[in-house]
Image 1 (cartoon, helix red, strand yellow):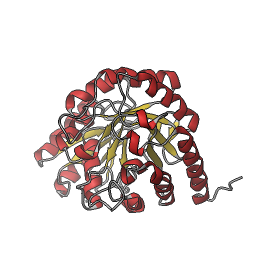
Image 2 (cartoon, one colour):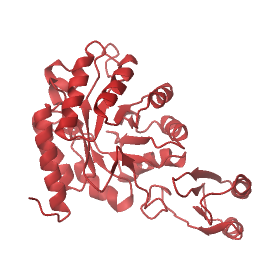
Image 3 (tube, rainbow, N blue to C red):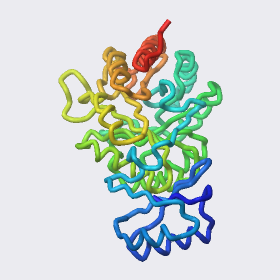
Image 4 (cartoon, helix red, strand yellow):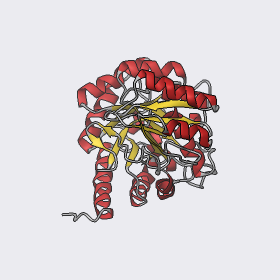
Length: 347
């Protein structure tokens, strides 16, 4: 990791350091910050000759070497002080709640608009809505690009930033051009490294965040963090880790709830953790308890499915979406628990 003496390297300086590391089989990935930029050395940075040549440059303050599977997401990296701000909330400073419908129904947009208004009233900080949907059955509804306009109209009406899942490279530009605040990478694509690279490149100099869900097929914690490293290594460090249940399934639940991995993640990475209890358990009656468990384990936020009339939802909503009333109670209790964990007196 190269830290320059000034806020960022000039074009000529970047060309010089790039030429040096290229000689040793490495490359440079700039990480552009609002105040200061840093420059990751991608590759084996152990060659002392390369490091000596870089440290000898007059405009380089220092070189930090991190021998870790993830150089940028590691909590010892210079991104450790990086903070992600969404909708005026800095993750980690207060409980951040994302809520919304599983799938936006383009034939009945009012359900989304009514849900959006109620979700804001319930206390959520970000609105989610599925535009494109991964489906096991090829004949099931796969989403509709028309829903992107409905999503953004919901954002305009409520003033809430929005999150939606992208499943292929073509979706990225459509979502960014529409003004989506956070791109979601679903469990099926969390190991799709070409998509992760494309997202990192596309949003390298934007404030757009990425909500990276944990694949049900991921094993060790390092595999989850390394997937986030793909996005950061290609230019965007605004990655949020989202446990959402893994395999094998637990009888009665949709997946095996994994909110307990939060402290394990925080031992290794600075990235905020936002847990999805809806997909973890898959049944509305169990979601509030799973949400509170996630906060108790130290989650920075929650991603909860909610619909003003779950039985009229499409996708997973009829089974696992909370009504806005239950969502409001869950958020209120979660905020109380958040305060208790931080030693704040609850009135």
